[in-house]
Length: 354
Image (cartoon, rainbow, N blue to C red):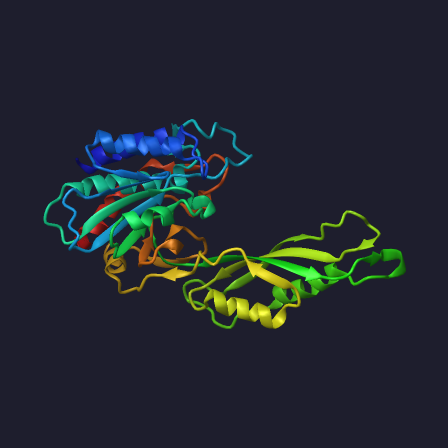
């Protein structure tokens, strides 16, 4: 198919996806739509949970493989919507609808790109595609579930809205639950040991602490307290416990263990990370994918947001049509021209590899 035909197929598919609710863990119906799309185009595929994957027709286990991946789940619609989030509307060169920008435009552009390369013989690399679930919640039944079925992957492209610039690094995310322990007492008699005050002391340290190593791509590693709760509903009782949550954003210069060591040395509160799965990642600037993008005139940067890239044990480039600033906003949209450019850019990028 020509790129124009691929674009028309991609936009038609995206409209179907927008019209079909696909909140994280509830992606069955959009998974069925993606399967039907591959059937229509005579592409063999397989499904693992709500993840769908396919390999190029001339797949060869002796060749290196490149993965094309994006997700088909969405967040809940923003309460500020003035339009029906599940009705795809074309207006002023834009396509409106929930998931159009994050990450439907990337998903359908990568699927169109996969179709372009699917039947090509004698390529130097295999091309593997995966539409993943649960990305928006970093769920365990998303990309991690399907990775073992994809064969040996050497590197990949993760489709997220980056204005088609190259996100070569990505912050890691760790959420930490903290507990300050005191002793209950009557507030009027100044009894007890106030756990809230202990928590505030730790929070003040967190607020003012600066990590030394600053990344040229991702800037500082940051600690931010985002939740606090004493579970105490009585105004006259000194709280015996105070819980708080730290949102940790880590650059590529620190490991999670180093972050936890700093907390251990300075906090009086007990703490425990919920997960250490979402590590900071980067792809070398001399990687063939990055060099191919530079040859196309693309810039590169470090992304403050996390994606399925964090869960892949091989180098990945995060790149796609759309704008991250539109993600999760009311009346979400993507420019139709961005999808056209996305397909053309992905094809030009991969042609330099194959």
